[in-house]
Amino acid sequence: DAGVIQSPRHEVTEMGQEVTLRCKPISGHDYLFWYRQTMMRGLELLIYFNNNVPIDDSGMPEDRFSAKMPNASFSTLKIQPSEPRDSAVYFCASSFGQGAWEGYTFGSGTRLTVV
Amino acid sequence: AQSVTQLGSHVSVSEGALVLLRCNYSSSVPPYLFWYVQYPNQGLQLLLKYTTGATLVKGINGFEAEFKKSETSFHLTKPSAHMSDAAEYFCAVGGGTSYGKLTFGQGTILTVHP
Image (tube, rainbow over all chains, first blue to last red; front, side, top):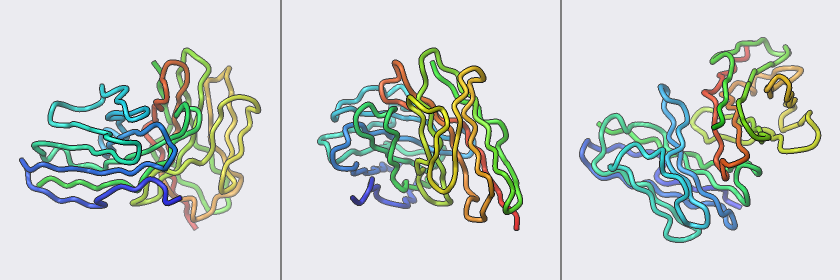
């Protein structure tokens, strides 16, 4: 299995532009999580899905952030418009079954820089 | 609500020395506990987990952790540090009504000196 695949690995964009991060979970996993990691705030859970349905989006910072999971093999996290404070590493993770019980498999992350 | 506290944001050891990374958790329900490792410019990788059963859990790369309910702790240890163990380590807790969601600690950066 190729693991959780995220793209792009690096993204540099100008303030105000739209940014779309992509994730392909492990086949058969039914939970998908989006995390953001910064030096100041550590790992923050933004949103997670179960069977493609958003379960908890309370971690999404504001309306500029949105996430979708149109099918079991693809999810996107969109920021529109982007701001410098959105600069961070964004991780996608997936899990099978009751996610907390099995542990997550993380992707390699997307390093976002907003200038 | 669940929470995790990792004591010490930085730990430094000599190669061959004991590694001890501390994790305390708070949970109103039986917890599921995890340790993850993150190498530079990589995602987090599962080291070991405790769900039920034996309280001493062995993981990859010679690491182990012991669940101590009375102390609400899940400390990570390795008898002899190797240079390749240098990384950031995260403790996480889940269970109960978290419905698949893990809560992570702030991380501990382990430095290994020759």
